[in-house]
Length: 300
Figure 1 (spheres, one colour):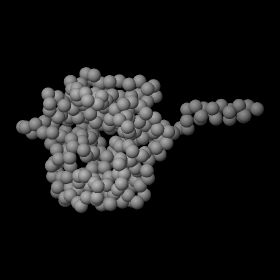
Figure 2: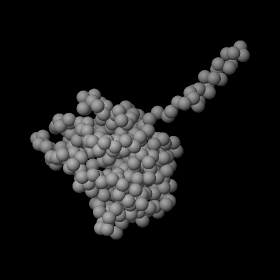
Figure 3: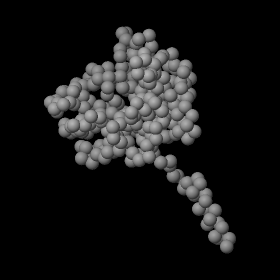
Figure 4: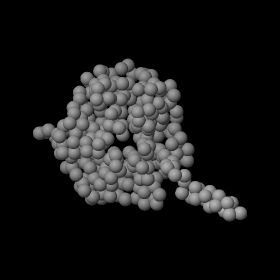
């Protein structure tokens, strides 16, 4: 009888607290129908969180950062927001001196957000603590103002990657240029715009990046074909992950360096959808996760 009671209590403890070392189920965040959502990693049980754009899950998966969006026809007014997914409580980061903030990216330790914003009609990169305090405007990397795009943290949490449509940069938080690469030299016939996405691997070795290619477009497609590449930061060698037949962008590491999330839009489709695939599969093993959605993000 005593052994039965002990077994019962052990089962209750395991069901309540989970087995030792068990991690919470990973979640997928995405943008769909002018709102930010989360779901299981396979796309099941989607849940709308709020109206907004550019969602990103924190590394541990307990918080979701995004930018709010103004009503149609209203002047640009976007703020950063952080949602505690356990309680549903949303914090709007109101102390940032900008009324147009967008595309927040979590630092590797989950304590800060890197983001783009406009101040006095200039596009800038900013950093702020996750509670909205400690706003820091990133110093310029040169004597004249530059517009940077696609800001994302490096693995060290003390530097970040951006691009200015001609060059890819790694910048320190003090504005120092740590590395600079010409995009067309990294990827011949490749380019970047304000619509690409960068994502650094947690081990600091590889940068995942969208590249717009100077290739023949398929019928009905407007603009350069979209592709996804990796860039080895030690060897400075770029490797294409998607074939010419697969138009893919909005890249995000899933399990670096083995798998990624991305969006793709096939011929005849009106909207892109979210997929996952192995980094070595050339898209042959891609799996559809969410139809008509974009900007995928996963907890680590």
